[in-house]
Length: 132
Image (cartoon, rainbow, N blue to C red; front, side, top):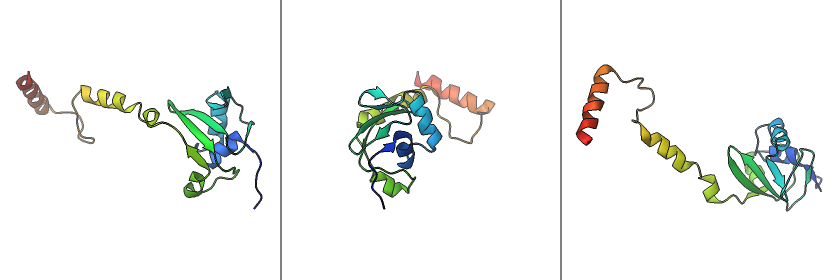
């Protein structure tokens, strides 16, 4: 097996399973969501071992370090050995409080129960009046 000196960044992000498809990785580069050394890079930019990459995905800024260069997509256990994720815990969980706050505003109804019936609505209103 040959050792690689450099790999295209879109190929590497796809190979380590950060994006589901290479076209998604390419689009992220095109949109300026992939940054190496404080510079937004094109998909054709090459990375070498030791590079730190910042990728914005779903509103979260991931901080990745290139440990091993690969061009072909591999299984998840092997892909995990090729990258170190330095993303802070606060960044990974920054939307949790927002989601919890949104879900707590209204009544919680288990999935699949459908809309409340007229009888359910009266019971809910009586319960709410008792809490005030």
